[in-house]
Length: 467
Image 1 (cartoon, rainbow, N blue to C red):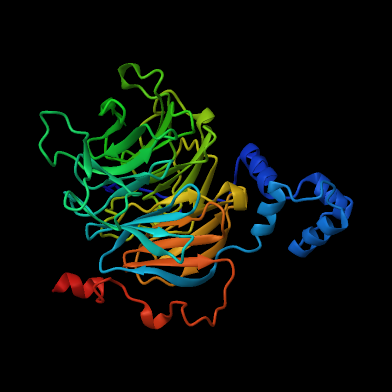
Image 2 (tube, rainbow, N blue to C red):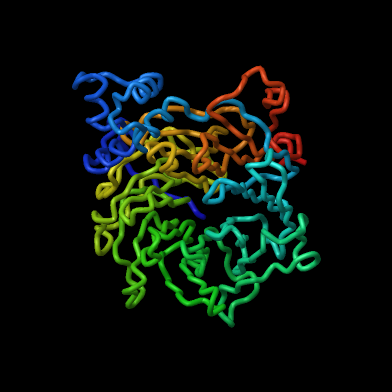
């Protein structure tokens, strides 16, 4: 997780205007805006927006034609009601919140904390704790979590070469590793590696739940076959830590990876001769912290220590790296501020479709995602930030459409409910906070400024470091 760069003699500080590839812009608009048929039914071709009330009245009067809303109509209406109200407290822990994610059906919320804890909440039953897990053999923190597609198993990792598996649907609420329940360990190290030879940063289940893929500090991607109970694929994938890896689509054949070598790579498991990727994508100027797939095997986004999110199309990838990787600046993201003169530097061989700027990536591997298909048509990209906010970008315009502000410390992760207009942010202040599209701002249960803090230990980071 390094972030050192040499400063170039000259750097262009002038920001470039936002641009985006026409095809992905068009595809996003189709998913998230009323169709031409709907527009024609309401305004006969006039360029004018349609209100939510207009959509409802049009359906009631039969003007919408089909007697109901299309998915794009629903996404368009939801865009006017983003989850910005609150926040409300889901949980208040005594250690930093590192990761969080909703289950695929939205019924469960899983969150991992530095203090060897993972909690699973029942999102359909007042956010009550469904499972309280005390982790096994944890090194530093819970680095990642993954829930199996059938929501039976939870995989968690830390800075060690072992991923542990827990049955989250067992009868007991408390799950203490190898005391009240067995936490099976999946070993990703070779026989000659020691117990702490490398750490795992990224864990994902395949869509069929039969495989787990990880990215690690050994510069590798490993795939574990749960049926065979062994590592089935080992790829020496990058020249530095692999901070992010994910399946591209439901087939499980394609993988995307991102590394501290500044590169995104695409891997086709059907042809892995000599550990050569299917393609390489250049454009970032520093280490990649996270990758999220659009789920179509074509587009994905990456978050980066160069303080940008980039949108990619795998059809634009190269067979190899074009030229030498540029080095514009000298810094370390773990303890330094990002150089202002480097904020608008551009890679000479940038292959990305669009670049999103405004959030901050410092001190930890900040995560970003596409917003859900069902409620938004994936119109947005949202991300945590080290400046204590959640940012929501419009994919098509690049604009910051909302910034959720309340937390007192870094927001490393956040998760958007797959069907409801709800976002949960997980912060190093120890809070899991819930943001909704509706709610009474005068509700006494809404978190207030008096409850803000910079640390779960109720003291500033500065004071903590001096003690």
